[in-house]
Image 1: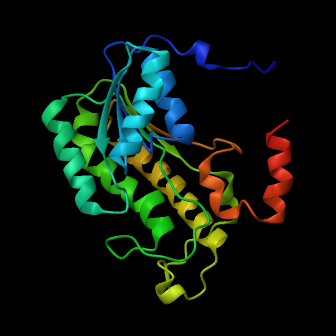
Image 2 (image 1 turned 90 degrees about the vertical axis):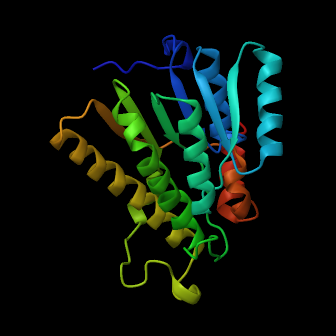
Length: 237
């Protein structure tokens, strides 16, 4: 079967649709906001920093003055911030066609979120889990709604260590081990949520995506590593 390249030019008009992109101020999130708004969607740009979120919006607006982008504060390491975001969203919008769970951290030193979770699992999975749950009723009443969870092929080396899920006190912690576990959690969440959606006959789809290797600030914690320097040369070709 012949492979067919699929590009942003193949995206149909999204006029009238409402989209949330987490981590929309940089990297893949920023590019997603740019393309989705270009196709006519109303895009809620979730950003931990309102300053960086506004800067991203102004940058996109220079290229697309008609971009309909709403910058809203969203810190996925803080459950109170997630609740404030979803409450504010539901006051302004009554539909959600696409939830793009994109934000994340990668191979960080050991640390905890505001609520005491190991930060890679806390931000990459648990924060998006909470966000999706609090937006689920809005998604459910939106025809053909879609949830996209950004995972990674790093899940292949991941293992859910339920005996020490949070690497308490840094015990057994390595940056890549924790990252791989968080990406595996993304896929398990995607699979189980889709199973429940199908079981209950809901008009909704949940998918996951591996974005490949991209030169974004997600890589900042491994920029000095030997392997990254080799990959970096390939990325710049």
